[in-house]
Image (tube, rainbow, N blue to C red):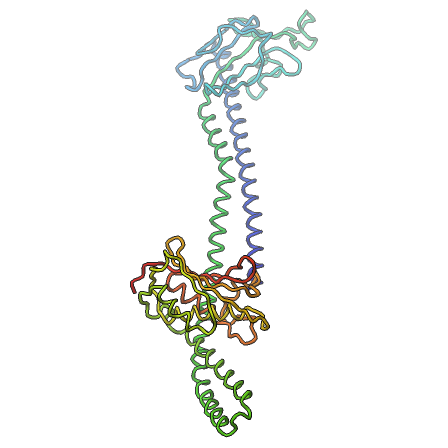
Length: 443
C-alpha cells in the first residue's frame, strides 16, 4: 500500500508539472500567434499600398471599383502635400514636415493607417524596398515624383537639397493608406480571451484528470478489498470445517478434567476455555463475511432498541438520548446492529490501560442533518491519526488478543444500510465512534 501511495504521489507530481508546462506553453503559443497576425496585417497593408502606387505610376489612374473593399482611403501626395490622387477618407492635404511615417492603429474604428514619405534620407524614413517596386530612399523604380504628370529622373547635380549621389534630403512625396482590419481585431480578441482562458482550461483538465486518477485508485482499492473478502470467504469455509470438530473435542475433554480435578487446575482449564472461545469467535466472524451484510432489515426505534440493549452489555455504560431523537427509526437487522454496538463498546473498554479501573463508556443518541447518530465515547488512550482508517482493514489489530475483523465487519454492516461509521479523536482525550444512519426505515 505504501508503494502504491508513493507511486500515486509521483504520478500526481509529474502530471502537475506537465499541466503547468502546458499552461505556460499555450500562453506563449497564443501570444506568438497574436504577434504573427499583427505582422501579417501590416504586411498586407504595406503590399496593398505598394500595389496601388505602382498601378498609378504605370497607368496614371486607379479604377476605384476594383479596389480591395477593405481599403477605406488611399492617397499619393506631391512634395507640397497636395494630392496627386486620393480616394475614400484620405486627407485632402498632408503636412510632410510633421507627418509621422509608419503604421498607426485605431481600435475604435477597426482601422490600420500607413503613411510613407518618399525622397528623404536618414534614419526613421520609411519606404518600400526593391521587391515591392520601390527603391530605398523613396525612389520608385529609380524615378522621383514630378507633380501631377507622373515622375521624373532623380537629380544628380550638387544643387541645394541633393546629395552628390542624387539622394534628396527633402521630401519628394508621400503615400497614405487606410485599411479596415476589423477581422484582425476580432482575431486579437479571440487570442486574448484564449490566452486568459488557457490556464483555466488546463487547470480544469488537470482537475478532471486528477479526479479520474483518484477515482481509479479508489476503485483499485475496492477491488483489492473484494479480492481479500473472496479469499477470506474461502478461508472461512475451510476454518469452519477444520476447527469445528477439534474445538468440540477440546470442550468435552476440558469438562471431563474439571470433574476429575475439581479446583485443582481451575485456572489452567479456564485459560483453555478462553482460547477455545476465542478461536470459535474468530471462525464465526470470518464466516460472517460470507453472509449478506444487510441481513434481514426491520424497523427499529433506536431509543427503545438501545434502552433494551445497554443493560445487557458486558460492561457498565452511561446512555442518554436527546428529546428529538427518541422517536427516530431506522431500517436495520437487529442482530447485526447489536453486534456493531457491542463491538464498539468492547473496543472502548479495551482502549483503557489495564490498571485503569474506571473504564467509563458513554453512548449518546441524537439527530444531525436528518440522520440518526449513535456515538460511543471513551477516555482511553485514543487512536493514532495514521491508524484511524487502517483499523478498519480486515485482520488489522494492535491488540494482543484481538482478531482484527470487528471494526471491518461493523463498517460493512453500517454501509450496507446506507450509513457511515467513523472514528475521531475526542476533545480532552479518548475516541468517539460515530454511527450515522438514515432515518425513516420501514423494514
